[in-house]
Image 1 (tube, helix red, strand yellow):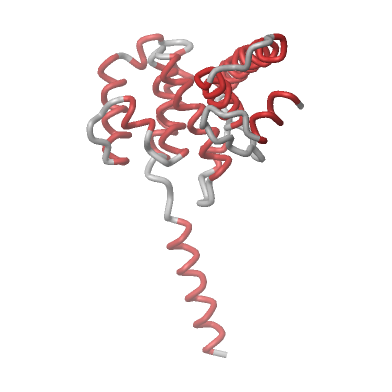
Image 2: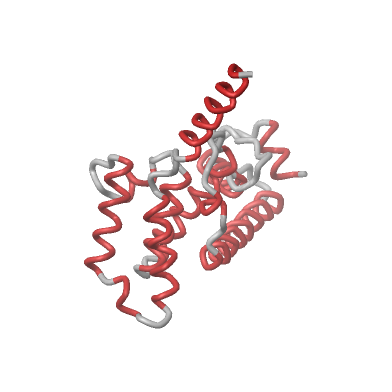
Length: 196
């Protein structure tokens, strides 16, 4: 009987320890959500000083060096990109916000580690912008494919690489996408994507 009680107590303690293992980005995410709500009534609630403070906190958690956009985009952590999406959105830096939100969505599709429920919520303003960007890219791909089909001359290697890159970029947000090799040749994958 004592053995069973000891096992239950041990399991309880393990559960408590695991339950306390929260995301290091959770406090920042909660602060960003509160500031987002307050920003509607108090426009200066997220001024340049607060922006710099939040960016420094996020960079410190991820140990970013140098602290620039390219280095941040290379981070593999959807929670990191979610926080930067919200930060840039609050700072009215929409291009960078969309970049990080796109990275968040891509990494969320491939994420095998559990993420807090807060980071599983879409950011509506950026969701719409991302869908618009996808629509523009789809239109660009359609125009290129139509040009390929209506031209007597074969497409150049650069044109093929461009369409391959655009197709891969478009398909990144799909859970079942297959990456096309960007080799500049009309191989079976590229032909299938263009002519089917």
